Length: 428
Image: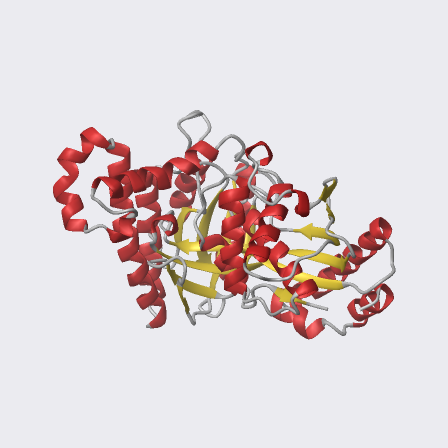
């Protein structure tokens, strides 16, 4: 659409059927304002001429399967109703210019940056270059573009703002230069490639798949080149449950070594057992080898492997519980997952700064408030070490729970979310 046509489509309600599926009726007026503001900001920054597109990629919530994907494990994840919005226009050269609300403009020439460069790790420029390289390697068309982005997937929130950004870059390249034909799961795989090789973070694939696919999904990464993605037809809201994410205010900066240690230690155990990843290891053989492993990989690596094997079993049981309409059983397994993450995986606080334990405090206070109720659950959320916890509570007490968490961690710390059924999407 042209600039004026796109603004008119938003304010007139022409896009409302799509927006309702993404955000729900209760936030529709706010969605109009947000999208219109993004289009106007694009116009002020990059001009009103040409054809524009409006794209959306959601954040994600990990419901279970904490830190298993990088060792080819199983997870349950869901896209949520917080997202990145991009207003984009193709350029006639290879340059990428974009402005993210609240941040400065980025200007990248991917044509001059086609291989990983360690000096540019952990930058948005490296992700742009990585996604462009992945598209080019796959034989897909690439090109330059101007974009204005706005996001309510808060950075450091554990809702995968970085994965949503990576998937958004792939969505832009798909729709601007490939007719929107690139499969969302292929975009997710290319996003993981960009993060692993160009950004310098050895992440798994769960975050990108959950952002790209939509809804609640069980993902089996036994073959990460062809993950088995199974939609789980369960409506949390319909079951009277709310998904609450509590941001404890912890900082993810300087935690890359903590995150990297988890897959590295699991893979060290696997290597000692003669396989590349834990999914390919025999659990009985691992158990028998624990005395010998203590001297070669250390106790923490063994505990993290114990978490991996137990978490995979829990995911299978949780999927079955949801499919058969036993939500309380699912919730009890969520609590078990959280305890395993705390005790065995050990990703609730960083040993670099043990005095700061916002996640531990949030989990302890949540257990005080909700413990004893069969219709509630709580656990560390996402990568851990800092950031957020997750609680699933009855809708009837969600606001009360949020008030308690906001009193502890500050106004707006607790977000009450819904599951979004649509993944990456072109709105106009």
